[in-house]
Image 1 (cartoon, helix red, strand yellow):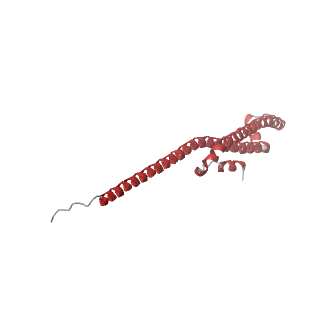
Image 2 (cartoon, helix red, strand yellow; image 1 turned 30 degrees about the vertical axis):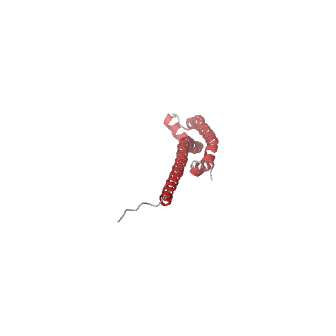
Image 3 (cartoon, one colour; image 1 turned 90 degrees about the vertical axis):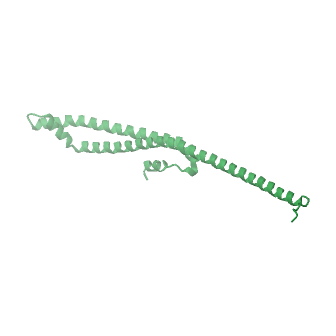
Length: 171
């Protein structure tokens, strides 16, 4: 598993483990940001190396072509530089570092997006807990009222049957 894959797996937010995600998030953002900066610096150095190699090869190929031809054109020099194996390798290296830098920068952006998502998910979790609390409180209150009402009804029944004999209407 590459280093970037390790961090990509940490992008997911576990709603059942929000506290750990919140605690570790700042450190993860910092680490990914540092990796992105490092990858960008490597990419820029590779791009600079390609430019320097092109300039060096320009002189080498211009001199070699001047020995073979009376007149050396820019097109001839450009073609010789383009066909040079050293330049092809330097360009391949640059493209590899560019891909890596782009991936790290994309991951850095994703972790910043994750910051906002953590805020939202945490807010939702807190509201859910408060709603559960309110619901439980309402349920306890309703059960209490039912209990009180039931007790009052039972007391009324007892009072009715304990009262002196009811007068019966003559038939």
